[in-house]
Image (tube, rainbow, N blue to C red; front, side, top):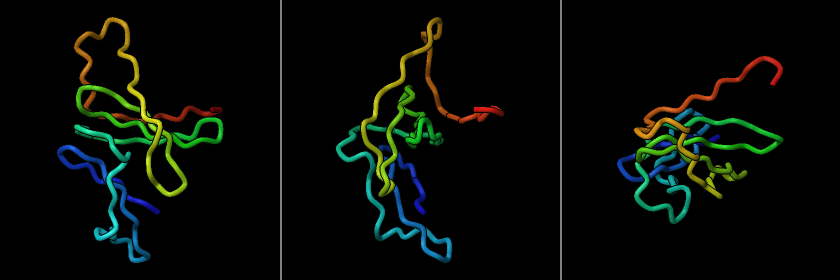
Length: 100
């Protein structure tokens, strides 16, 4: 089990101990090499057997593949919706509809 912690310019994934505490000594920035990321919120969704993280921040929405070790990879910026020139996402939620 992992916890994701956002700071000013990084997103860390940290193991969670059996007691429920975050193992701060073993937190690792994710995704590796991702510079100047200012995450505000994160949500998850499994699609076609793959787990994805959706991260809002830095005036954009990014989606990343979630790896088995808790790290994120293959991140990409989601396209700005048509007609939303002032797109500045701060929060992201994943809503699951019945039957999906």
